Length: 356
Image (tube, rainbow, N blue to C red; front, side, top):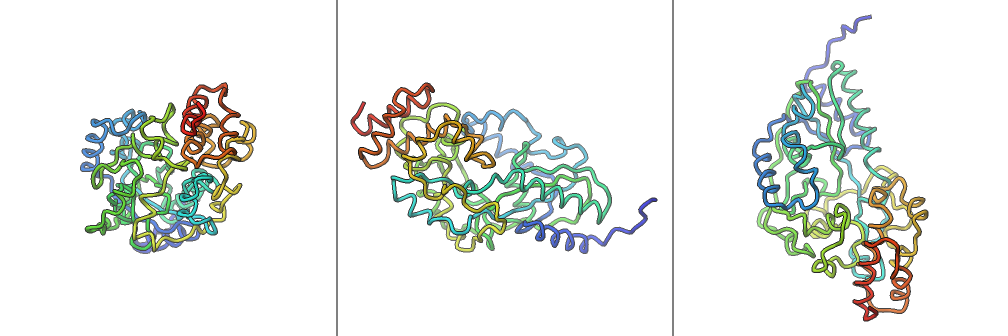
């Protein structure tokens, strides 16, 4: 039977879509068009300066990242969503950073991997939209394709891009994930968000490695999140001491942002802390075998790092820890590790403690 039901008026459709998004766990949605010309120019400048480091994929996709209709032909609108991730009950981030016997894991990675969880919810939202309006050509994205997600979210009214280059919302700070639905439905547009950093620049000096080289300019090659997650090879020696005890990612520029006093805890229980990762002892983490890493990190965003780079990061943190027999003993167990990457960083750490 042909469906002859009249689609709801645009504003009613927008209201129903937002209500369904809330039911699915999203903090907010917004709708924008596909013009990203200004952001495309800034992306080209950033790539030309080599600030993407080893992230070759940032350049490999050409203009598809900044031109949604090239990534998915027929795209007219982008539905941008955000989902809060701060894990309730996690140990205070500052306390962990001040205790160099512990490893600091970026708070977004303490629970389950958000990619599949958000993608499933986004697909449900897209299916709901099809039921409201009509079947539509669409695709959902959660860090799964070349998408300028922060620019799209800004244009959809979800927040503004702060001086640290993260998205900030007046009502939710910056501790949230972003996702998108590309669609060929000509949905009503939301107003872009206005910026509210003002004269504040607290995030810039807060960066341990000086990666925020100027307001709204990030050199990823110095960013601890890049160094501990994206970088495949050795961490530059001159940056290792500044990494401190951060073994996966970094939150420092967000921790000092005054807008995060409005940040909200994650509503989804899957983002709760798993395996005590909010306060792990470095010496314990360094003992994990490859099998233990797989068993504990499966289902986590950390899993894609792999056991070798996980140990690389922990070796650097142990090199920055207060000298103790426990720290040295842990490092000695991997002095001759079969993985060159682990062996090199371990010996650097031992040298920091006068043992190499």
